[in-house]
Length: 53
Image (cartoon, rainbow, N blue to C red; front, side, top):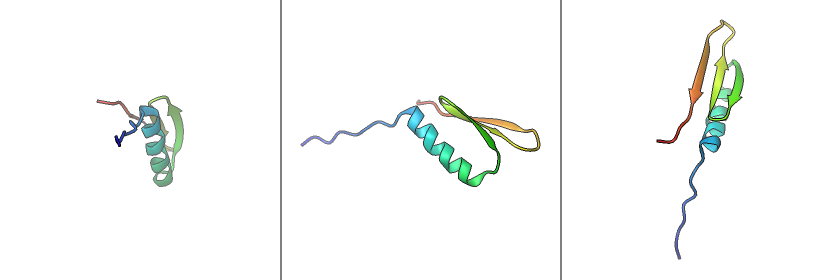
């Protein structure tokens, strides 16, 4: 019996990371196709992006 491994997609991984970050960091968020923008109340903005290597 062959064991097939399911590949994780960029979208799936982005969603998982997004959930983890949102639980720990107080900010507002903008979801992107392969990433997440994080907007802090002090005006700082960051983008987390996910890409397969």
